[in-house]
Length: 353
Image (cartoon, rainbow, N blue to C red):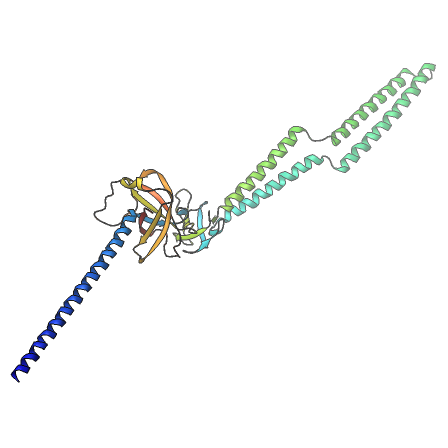
């Protein structure tokens, strides 16, 4: 009995020892597997970091720079026709300025222009038809009187030769003939004057008066057009600065709205002067934004600046150096899906691929 118990104890010790050895061997294999996986992951991360040439701050902007649209005339805003975030077309009215006094000036200028045109037409037309007929009739009458006076003088001259009339009668017939001739000459001159075209200097003066009046009307119309503030380009209204009822002036200009073309979103990155040689056109880029920590946006370098400048994008890091010159680089993003908005600060990573 005692021998059986000893044998059972030995078998139990052997079984426990085997289980311990199996557990230790399995644990060691698991550690080796985890270590291998960790080494593979570290190798992948190392390769990913090896693709990043440099990183720098940037800021989101549209296809065009932000444009501040101001007034073109002095007055009071009567209406703001757009809202922030609204899409507008080039030439679309975005604000109205009260310019009623200019409208009255336009009416006056148009009236003066019409009067000048009518005066020119009157000058080209010349005398009225009634005046022309009257001048022709007076010429015909004077011609008849002249022919009658000439026949009378010829008869008196014949009678004077035969001694039937005196010298006094001959002289009187001669005077009547001279008067009739002078009257005919005056009538013919009057008819010529009535039918004559305008003088060149008169026509030139009339033309200049017409041009002056029309130019005044166009100037007033142009001033009125400036009372309607229009969008200089197609884009998105980013901000409205004024409201209806506020005064605007061209002497002390103040923007009414700001807008930019957001049809293509891009990032303006600031590359440190030490890293300028690592950037080139077409280089792939990854953009990150703190607002979307789980998203990244791909793009490519579309333009590299030609001059160094001062930093404009501040990251807020107290250790950031602001005394270095930077080179502005534009990055066209491939697909932002409406996430990125103009003015958002980003982090730009330039890749080596």
